[in-house]
Image (spheres, rainbow, N blue to C red):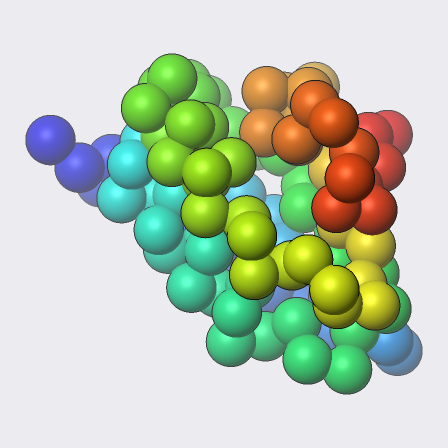
Length: 101
């Protein structure tokens, strides 16, 4: 079952990329976010992933997202997770240059 209400709003502010996540976050949502990151993070020094508008984060969704972040390794970009659900989406080891706000 796919989270029909999931959306990503994306905008740039200089060399910062902002991704506002809205709705429920499941496995399909995780793949949408990964694909959006791959497509949009070029030329960004920071990518802000805003979680304040997320409803439910399904464990499979967060697991899928975290297990597919390897493409960020070696990139000169910092992922900044903001909002009340930031800790549920951010990698625990912070090896990817991630910040939780």
